Image (cartoon, rainbow, N blue to C red; front, side, top):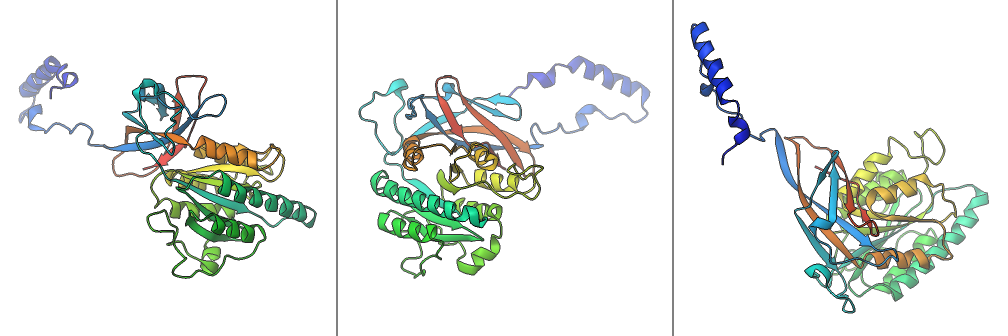
Length: 362
């Protein structure tokens, strides 16, 4: 393959070599040196990002192609090489604009119901318990009434350590039982070999530690979510973590309720690396919960804090995840190095909203 840019300075090279032969006692031709291998200092890797695209009414937009998306990475715009649409429904009532078809139907979805009940002052404990009980009941009804047969659900809680109450399952009764125990602060049911893992063929967290071992590994909520992300990262595809709780404690932030600059980034990076989108549903009716907002935005989820009842944000999560786009592009990274790269996915149509994780590890 010709490389015009390398051949432009031929005259200058020839003159330089001629002068060197006249002046140097033992000249060395520039051609004696092997040319540097183009691109030898970078690794080129394929990056996969999933993106949810919705219209002003919150409905999934389908029929988009590569020309409809823009990816921003490291201050430059990149066009995706391919765009694939995945869905759990055929959208039979709609036409197929743009000739883009659903590539895989049905597409299994993975949801993690996460109940965060930190230790709080006595004056707030009863209120928090009431709200968590209400949230768990709404989540159980949502699992029974809105989820599809091929939707997988796991139940996790955190108080002073991480607890796995239910591995991924399509058994809605098992989800209901796990939610009741988690909301009441009771430990998970005993794990028997026949029940410890997910049903055959589905996602599973069976490799996750249990009991005291798991609690000892996760003394903070940051470590709890990081540990969970590591386990979820072994499961292919998008995982949706529905987080019921309140803002995280911060030891390093400059103001109460603000993001912890030491513990937040590793947690967020781990969730993005595992392709986990956080949908934070606040127990407290306050907009100033910075960590919940940031975590949702950074991982491609959403943050809800004002709603008449918990069924409203739960319905929105299920509806928005009826279909998503998988974007593929190539990125260059320093050869032999690892790190984290921030990205932003946009759609060209200003009437559409896109949700996508804010970065990836390499």
